Image (tube, rainbow, N blue to C red; front, side, top):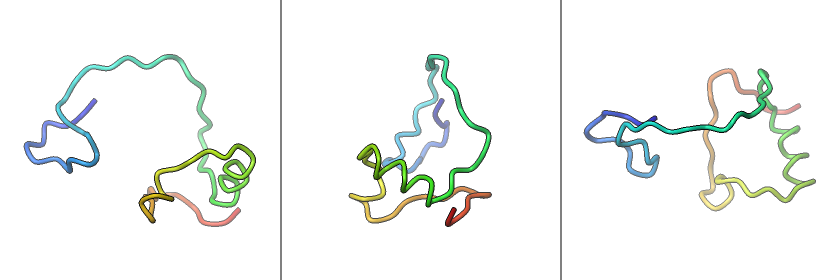
Length: 66
């Protein structure tokens, strides 16, 4: 995990390169649309980084809507 870039974006906490362990988990191989995620947030009260920052990141292949 991490980056060897000598000047990474500090807010991403990408460096230094290091080994990490991850417990087993389950993940769905599909993109979650904004409408579906909004339903999840409303049902759980789950906070995201986008609210305090006023923006978020979308990845290629992401969708808007349901």
